[in-house]
Image (tube, rainbow, N blue to C red; front, side, top):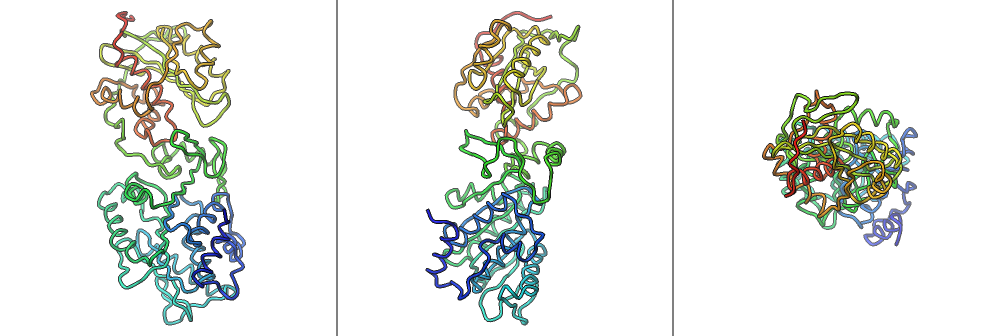
Length: 480
């Protein structure tokens, strides 16, 4: 396999575009550091540079890059990349589009000023076409034209189209009218002005599952090369995904802004699951949910148990169970260990308690023993018979009674979908936030499922509800 740089030279030679004195800058990142020594180069920007080389080489004509805000992607792609392209081929006609004309114009002005202030680039701007939003190189056809979503490109052939953040913010992202306008512009204006074989690059922070990136992936699934760089590594083998940066599970990205692990963690905690998954992980979820909708859940405001001597005694339940979803590793990693306590009263199920954390094998066994001691009425303890579940059962069988191995049947989505009608019908009750503060995170994971980074709480929930509400065999013992 040839290198991106080798592909680039071959493509330029084929089109007879090689300059007499080839650019000394191998990548847009090298050009950025040459023009501004303060420029930061992170592993994520290395990956973006590599993708841009393939665009320039003609081996990728539709590139989509999604990444956290304020991590250098727009500066690299909408400022340094066009400058770098023009040093190699000053005949290129580059169009830059953003959510509004003023934003796109700022990129045009920055590129123009870079060329004017750095004669070593070997380029000059024609004085009679030097507006910030529209200018042309002296002695060449190439230049930059900037436009906002909804703006015209009539009569302007485009050799490279850069779509930079076509969504302004959450208000526009939630507006179906705005999303439709962006899509209509791409279909009727943006894509139609591209010369044959001309590349288009979409760079954005994700806001909504139906934003322009989401719709392009759905409507043109075999057309776009997607590079999503999440702020935190979250391997999802069931979706065939590994971390593009080769990080360990749970590891945060090296930040172009110098964010520390503590600062990343604070952002994650403050933004909440839905915003974090969308803006920082690049995986937005529907506000109403795909499998579980937000307004389906019912809430109880008074504890459904009495606590005495450190033990919780369930009140008037027909059945009380524990449900455990174990991690795949016996060390800290991407997967969480989740243990839940559920009670059934007639045809209604109640989530009573939950423990969740990245736990070692030893800590997991301790949590199972502790939760069993805290909820003595939960005689049946359902443990998914995979990952560390089998080892936990073998380790604790002689110490903790009622450990029941559960062999999962069907996919995670199928198992969750099977119990979702009970949630929709109002038969599933959760503790209100004033009873258990962790319930907000539980609901967000359920609403985001199956698009969220983690689904451990959903797995434990569907396993418990399958036993309590779908199983044909139910004990007739009522507690308290």
